[in-house]
Image (cartoon, rainbow, N blue to C red; front, side, top):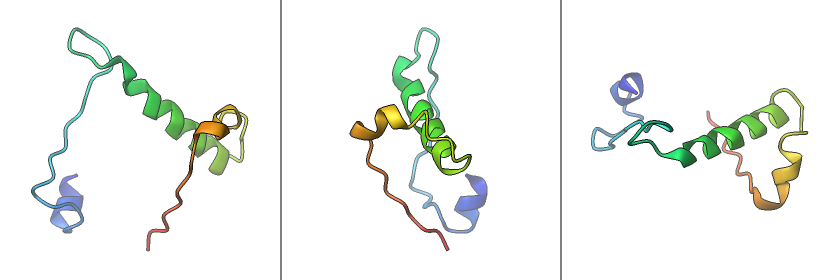
Length: 67
């Protein structure tokens, strides 16, 4: 985060915080984005679509090319 801010890729006004999935103040649904990211990553990088296949009817991918 600090590197992105120093290069001007993140504005100083953008607040970044981290949540916890467990514990008394935890957010139990934080594991959902991790599962989705893992399924998409496996399908794209490892060419292993078995984890993303069951989710295809509810997933829309938007590919953004970074220069």
